[in-house]
Image 1 (spheres, rainbow, N blue to C red):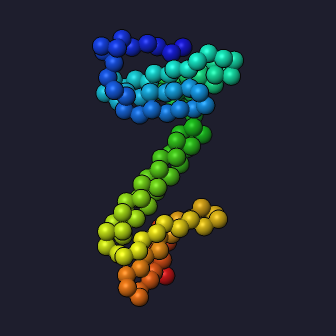
Image 2 (tube, one colour; image 1 turned 90 degrees about the vertical axis):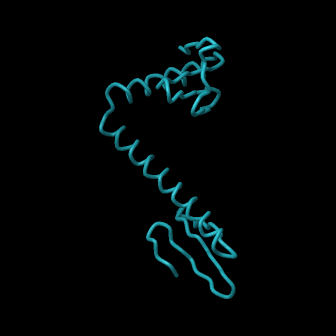
Image 3 (cartoon, one colour; image 1 turned 45 degrees about the horizontal axis):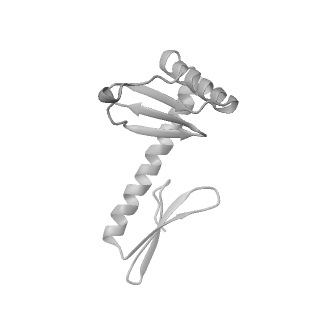
Length: 127
């Protein structure tokens, strides 16, 4: 199932995912995926499932799949927002620490001199 690209024509991949022992390379400019794995019953099954999922996403995504993809995208955007906010706070305050409670909710504790605050990154409230 894994297609081979001649080394001379093989540009550097944009993204690389590793799922169990299967490597998935994404080449953004060529709009291409390359899947590589060492054959075994388990790896063959996972690679086949992954290939079918990729084809389904590309050709005919179901509403459930679109919903799942949208929620993953929103989660990634939120995580990127939290990371960027932490970098900004770190450059402006003496202390900036990311705290995550048991439910997975992120807060950033900041301090400057004797002043302290906690920023809830979801609700954007400051305590």
